[in-house]
Length: 329
Image (cartoon, rainbow, N blue to C red; front, side, top):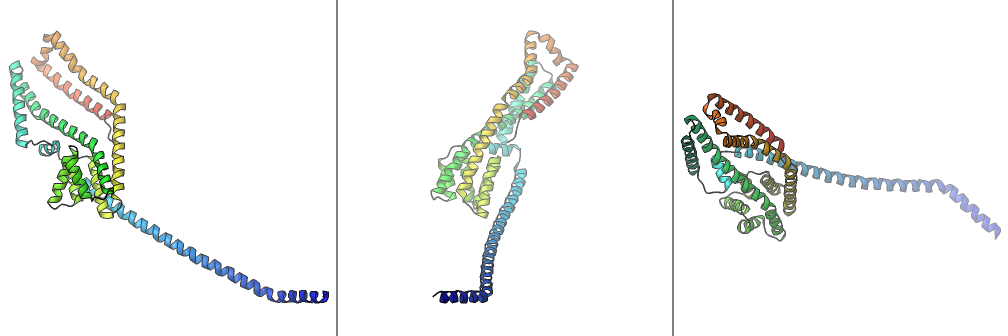
């Protein structure tokens, strides 16, 4: 038995010695084949990943090109629509006034003030100058105040309208119906602006074009953002409700930042108001206590020159202080 066992072991050792090279070669070959297959698989995955990256890059570049084109178009439209004429300002005020009515009111106001100053005793050229300035400047200032107040009301309600639009789109309504909902049940002045958008669609304009026209009566950067989002979604697609929801959040954050900046700059604004009003307050008090002391400024030509120079320097100082305390966000 021992001899048989030793013979078997010897035969196995001899067979292994002869077959070792072949077995090692087959093992290495199998290992190389597995590596080649793995490499081919990695190459395939890498190629698929590169294709995905290239596709995303192409899509991103397309969106960026569309955004640049839209921004350029919006800037051109803004420059063209940045019209400070009375007609455009009247349209932005939301009032039903006409240009003729505005100029008639301005003329009557300037004439009335000029007559009052002539009755008081001012020279005719001073009264005419004051009446002209009042007739030209005061109505425009009032119109600008009305436009600014309407824009502030719009900014307060616009994020809420966007939230309503987001909920409407998520519930299955199309964008046009969501805008109709705001145009019928929203708050002014957002309601009126979206009503104009719906009316523009009824005469053949598309939704992006109608939204872009909103900047004519509401020239705000927030409205410009909204029109760009609508135009991008119409060209590149995407989740519209998410885009409008993000825009609503951005608008709310911008409003919070404006409130913080206004609160931080309130002390400087109060100081500027006091400094700007102090000469007029002192002049009024001196006129009440010593009218003859101040009357020489109105009767003597040298006093007229002093008043003109003082008005110029006061205007320069007020302009500088206004630029120092106003911040654009």
